[in-house]
Image (cartoon, rainbow, N blue to C red; front, side, top):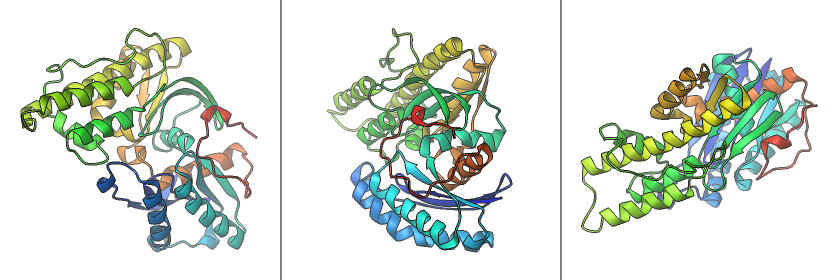
Length: 337
């Protein structure tokens, strides 16, 4: 079975082909939003329109396949930026009509959640810690379209906090790789920062207060000039440790309350090796196991959409040609058919 996946929910234009658990081709165009300090929706939509045809042509050339060979198509239907989602959806619907192929609307977060089953062959049920620029969710995954939310962010997601702090330091967008690189030579205990919700026993998150505290610290210490390389390294290491502390605390509560021993970490922030190491140690100490997709499969990509379409097919989810675009789409609204 050959499945095509198209992803255009944010600032990556991506497409991939998956056949019998193997990626036959994967093409991705990463947009440059550094001039805006974050993703500009209008610019993103125009970039998707301009580059999706080239991405698709390159995918067919790489794989040696054509649309006539497909057994199914998956496309991100939400959540995400409406303009970008529409570009991918209209392309996928047009292809499905032209070649008479079944089409599945893929939930972007579920694609992240299921990608671990491609890389690591995880069995249901398992716990999910999804960390990205716009989402921060703790959930129990019982099957395809079967989610129980254990906790989510009250305000900012971890990825957004990291991006905004990196920008305050003069770093590029996205800020995750910049923060991780700066932190490598720093002392994680050099600077004391507030650990979000440390007195609340729950699996929920909040990163707005930490973001504000960090930006204020940077502004205060840059009054007389830019931070030195050593000070910046110490700050980034301390900032990274503070986020890891709250993630570990939240995951510990979720593991105890749910009884789940196998946990998947996914989303763009999950590509951070320091976070992976800290969470792995926590799960091991509690008698559990942390499972993570490859770092290149944590960030937005087309392979996770193609794999989700294959999972939908295997689970008996009915294809749908008349689905709407969904800017907001909670995971627990999904229902198996």
